[in-house]
Amino acid sequence: MNMFTANGIRVNTRVDGPAGAPWLTLVTGIANDVSMWQAQMPALGGFRVLRYDLRGQGGTQATPAPYSVDLLVSDLVSLWNELKIQKSHLAGLGLGGAVAQAAAIKHPDRLLSLAACCCRAKMVPDFAVLWHGLVETVKKNGFESIVEQTAQRWFSDEFKAAHPGALDQVRAMIRRTSQEGYLGCVGAFLGLDLEDRLPLIRARTLYISGAEDKMGGPPALMAGLAAKVPGARHVSVPKAAHIANIQNAEGFNKVLVDFLEG
View 1 (cartoon, helix red, strand yellow):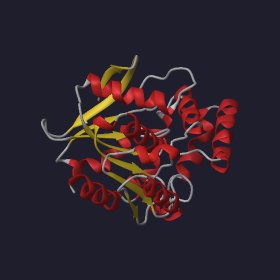
View 2 (cartoon, rainbow, N blue to C red):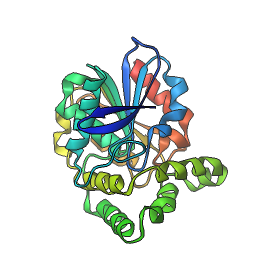
View 3 (cartoon, rainbow, N blue to C red):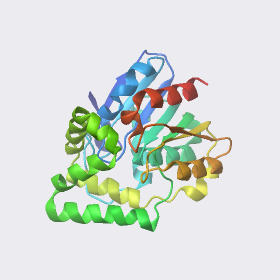
View 4 (cartoon, helix red, strand yellow):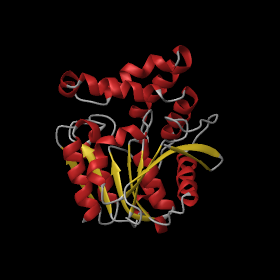
């Protein structure tokens, strides 16, 4: 792990893969950190992979709310500039997928391609209810009070029963999030409003959903997003819920690598 100062904060980063290979940047979501991509790394050996934690998540410095998606995009672009990355493939999951879409709209010259995973482009009232409830619970009872329900929400019942060790790792990852950063990133997510601008995306684009994701980025919703981006496709990973890259790493890796190398 390395710490770089970008956009005025210390950003926890990790770089893997051969120097000189095309860059691929992986953007985490809310209460995620760089460890969430560990199962992808063996499949991404042909890329110079940049992983980093969003503001206030994992090891990256938190600042007081409010945060916005635009702020998180500025963090990303500032990190690229710090590392002298002119162009990169860009993939993000959850809030990271929203940040990736926003970066593709705002900085089209910096992207080699876009893979938006298990995500949305607009906050809607029914989904916002969940997040407002989580914010109130955290403010009242502390961050620990939402760790278990967050871990439970991300995976199918079958996966949770079969992989208790994976759930333990996920709980540990969630606990590495600062309360201040959690509230800031949830606030940014609640303000998400990109859908009308998706036709502006010019990068080669793939939307990847988990076939069993009922809430974070359901397949039908993500197919609708892909339809708004010129030339974009949507692929759903079987036997995977919201954190598809952990629940079915092999299936997710094949979809992502086939797209990146296509």
